[in-house]
Image (cartoon, rainbow, N blue to C red; front, side, top):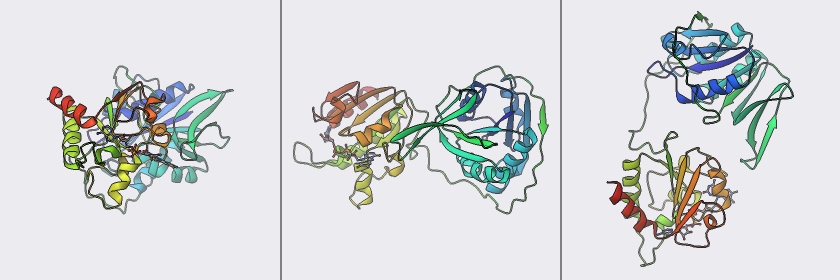
Length: 332
Ligand SMILES: Cc1cc2nc3c(=O)[nH]c(=O)nc-3n(C[C@H](O)[C@H](O)[C@H](O)COP(=O)(O)OP(=O)(O)OC[C@H]3O[C@@H](n4cnc5c(N)ncnc54)[C@H](O)[C@@H]3O)c2cc1C
């Protein structure tokens, strides 16, 4: 029996990444159970009642509505033991990423994180992940059981099927929470520039802060143009390493950028249908982070930049200040 671990969101529902992990677990074949952890779990179980799971196991209660190591780990362990699970999948949320290795240890199994593919090869499950700063991709398998796998977002389509009434079985873990979660501190939605579900990834490069052809540095204008575009389009904001490093060196650059925005070999590999790169040279260590972007466009002053060498579908050799000013005008 395989087991898919899920936790509910604050509204009691399931996140898109949970539904994607469900599709990936179904594609693995064989009987599987779904284990749901949350303050209330019936609505989430009902939403996926027709997914084909053999059992719906739940750990329910106020203690399980919040991210806390002690309760999340105890819940996952109890669900795994109850299902007698051999392969345990979970969406790579911060909650599951934090506890899966510890749970594997308690169960005498093994855990792997950042899984980007899951298939059956020669009758055995085979997982895909990147190694060595995303330079090498490996497909591997393990003989240890249980084998716990944290699945990255976007690796399977989100499950969509009819809701129903799930026959849930309650599981009671032995958890004693000593840590009290007192609340959440989150930036306001306008400050929050990383939006994994956005249709467009908008990437800014160091060119925005460089001396422009008229001899001026126009950082303040760059900030206005970029923030206006993000506000109007709700795109996700990415950056090159050069630009985020400038902030770290104490140069007054774009204050809303951090290393969290960095896309590339040492940055992230986001998944969006489209990407638009601006004021960026399109060098290999940066563009490796673009490999899951569907349609790629770039605006650079340099006709010989990396984008022109097969890295982009469309390159506009143009001044990004002028182009984006006009784009914002048209969108507004
Ligand atoms: C091991 C290693 C790992 C790395 N990992 C990463 C990584 O994860 N992510 C990453 O980004 N980089 C990474 N790098 C660095 C990478 O090689 C590049 O140095 C970096 O991406 C360059 O950033 P940039 O294109 O913003 O800056 P620059 O190379 O300075 O390019 C700026 C560009 O802006 C253009 N420009 C200027 N003004 C305008 C204008 N008005 N309109 C349009 N275009 C304009 C210029 O023509 C130029 O092409 C890594 C390097 C190494 C060695």
